[in-house]
Length: 74
Picture 1 (cartoon, rainbow, N blue to C red):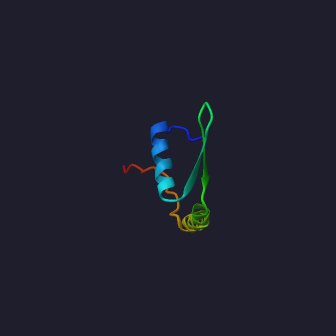
Picture 2 (tube, helix red, strand yellow):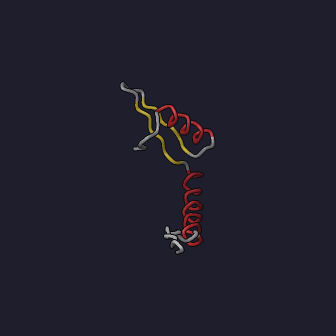
Picture 3 (spheres, helix red, strand yellow):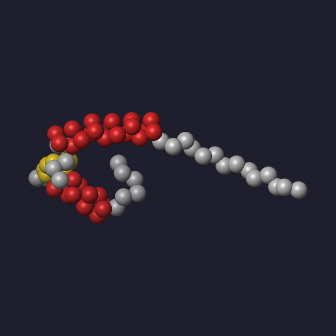
């Protein structure tokens, strides 16, 4: 589901998240191999914080600057 990310980078990031306790990993003993990742309770609590931070950033973001043409002086 993540476009533009290599399987190596994805595996490394998932391992980091697992070590930090943000995702849990379940390995199914089948062929082909199947692995599922789920958010832990800790990550679900963090989601609430991130959503609030996103709202704050949206409210306080700088206005977009539009390009202006410079008038030539004669």
